Amino acid sequence: MNARFALAAIAAAIISAPVLAQSTDYPTKPVTIVTPFAAGSGPDAVLRLISDKLAKLWNQRVVIDNKPGGAGFIAIEQATRAAPDGYTLLQLDSEHLAALPHLYKSRNFKPLQTFDPVASLFRTPFFVAVPTDSKWKSMSDMINEAKAKPDALSYGSWGIGSPGHLGAQQLEAMAGGLRMQHVPYKEVSQLYASVGAGDIAWAFASIPSSAGIYKAGKLRYIAVAAPKRVPQMPDVPTIGEAGGPKGLEVNSFVSLVAPKGVPAAIKAKINADMGKVIADPEIRARFDTFAFEPLAWSPEEIARNVEAKSKVYGELVVRGNISLD
Image (cartoon, rainbow, N blue to C red; front, side, top):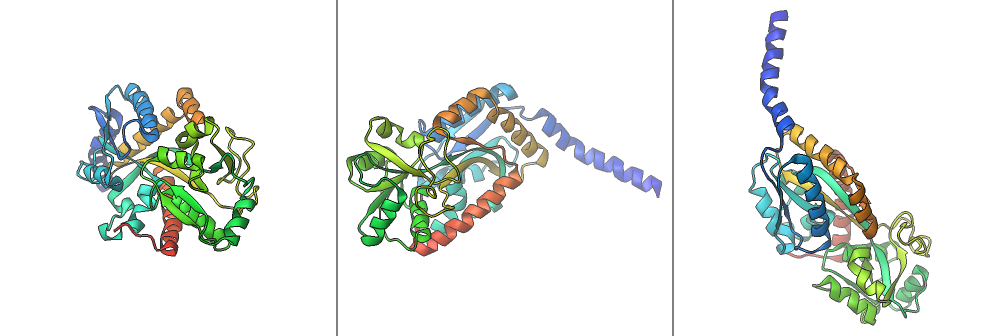
């Protein structure tokens, strides 16, 4: 009996040795991170800063491969063709992971069956931005006018199914069934220029995406869709504090995933090393500039947050009868 146990232990050690070696040695060659975000965009800029830190930590090149377009599917499809060995990673935001399956049902995209969550990067909150000369001083002002004028008020977003669109759908539902007109834009810069000019009444906005128009004095924030105020904008109340529905959160988080089947030891190493990079003072300072919240989630926590957001988005897509098929 003892001999059999000894043989089993030896066999297990032999089988596990390659996995342990992979973990210890990884990476032994350049790592590619595919991203659906265009070069020069906010997520791309952050990814490049992070990749520089990873390259120094790993003593290997980390190559950023920008594949924008196709609602993210160009990058997604490229990553799915890669080997599940940890040498090809994919940067996705929570909308790619949680909204695309509901918006493009015909594609049968099942993110958590296609990819393994590996590491989290950051989460960004969204503010309610209005023209500087808007008569609205609070969410109560907006909601009262929207109730008095159904389908009359317009809001903009950076695309159908974006957090700006689905967040407004959630606001409508939680504020008692408001009805407002959605105006999608192709360019984020054009969206906030239109808010500043008063072409549309309001839009959800992150600090980096609306900073130029904000600094030019053409728009202001009347609330943030977060559970607490953002340190970078301490005078801006939460939506609940400003007379809107309590509990309304509109945010987006960015993560790294890998083709399904990456060895557990390699996933654990990438996650741990990314945690070290996210804790770097230079990275933290850059995140603070944008009001990005650093995240150090485990793969399991990423999956749980994706599933929770997917449930909310699924309900909002049905409510708004939204489809991009």
